[in-house]
Image (cartoon, rainbow, N blue to C red):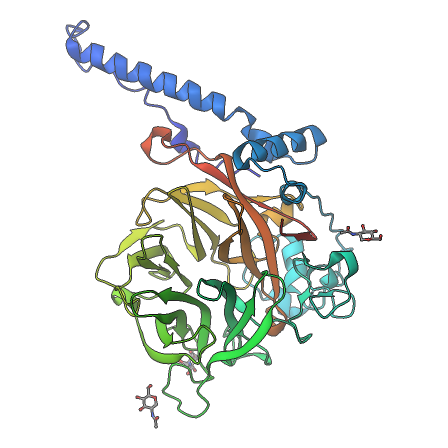
Length: 483
Ligand SMILES: *[C@@H]1O[C@H](CO)[C@@H](O)[C@H](O)[C@H]1NC(C)=O
Ligand SMILES: *[C@@H]1O[C@H](CO)[C@@H](O)[C@H](O)[C@H]1NC(C)=O
Ligand SMILES: *[C@@H]1O[C@H](CO)[C@@H](O)[C@H](O)[C@H]1NC(C)=O
């Protein structure tokens, strides 16, 4: 999948010329300098063309010759020879057959997508005859440590129902992962949504009352033990941010070495999404209980989808969709991680990106975002930056395999977090939510391997093509496991 719409950035600096109409400057020092510069850029361009030659393989993943190239390509970058790692970058096709045309339920026809892809319409229609393809049922498609899975134990099945160690579906939507270095344990925090979905008022968005933030612990990223609700809703006080009638989304937890506290940041809103704030909570233990501190509009701006990222040097950042989701704002937190500082940069201005997830590899920052289309899935984009404060460059759609609609809908899911794959530099787990707006508690998890390697397939916006960012690739698998 390539995105061609930014061809304007492909322009080369060919318009350098002498402005002296008389031509008297033909042999001037300036001309020599200019031609030297032009020559330099020509060489740079040729080198970059050459190194991008095998880039077009992502246009069409149906030919096995081309698949071969993908494999070699990734291996050169990862230096991986483990047979299971080889599986991670295998390109897998998925064929979804459309049902015959039929009358739509009135619910679907009201949806706002402008030019709906028919399969997205099917996805959003809770009466669709192919609904089981997106939301396979509990009896046939649950996986987890309580199921006898034989040789498929420890396999991920993106989109199927994932059970915890007690055999209950995991409730950690819009989540993020904390690796607690003290106990060498992973903690997965997310929205606990095990309640009925309804509309708070006519035409309002589908919602579930706040129940709280769910927490699950694991040593292997597959077997998850329910640690309970670590930050619960407020039942009675109607003016409290966490009153059940409000909205709590995308909780993320980071650990402060300085204060030895676990700090949770989350999106706090009212049912109409007009409060648009961030909330902060704190705990002495990863499994809570978290004490809710306050909410605010960071830097005085509206804040909806958000995440936090803790860098290697211990500085943590808040990244949030702002100015009615048209811009991402990014800024460092205070040393105790309990507030933002006055420093803030506006990035990806006017690009309408949400669901940001940030990760880092070899000193380069990467981000995967979605476009803003409510609960409907859309095309993901990967971005890269040398400084987390920007400028951020667009790398293109990271999704590979599945089918065209899968790639245009992030596998019918939306990014929420990216975890470094233990022991495999350059490899990550991409965590996404397949939202089910008809029954939000039944939203599914789509975890897939994400690999950084190979040249990016978009012309770059800055630096005349320097540096050569690596491609971010997310590979579809109907089932896979960690190396
Ligand atoms: C598990 O075993 C079954 C039966 O032997 C086989 O068909 C299947 O391919 C195996 N699955 C994996 C993931 O190895
Ligand atoms: C209700 O919550 C608000 C906001 O957090 C707080 O100021 C107020 O004291 C609370 N009222 C009660 C009765 O706890
Ligand atoms: C949301 O908007 C509706 C209609 O505009 C209004 O009736 C309702 O009171 C609002 N709710 C909140 C929580 O602001």
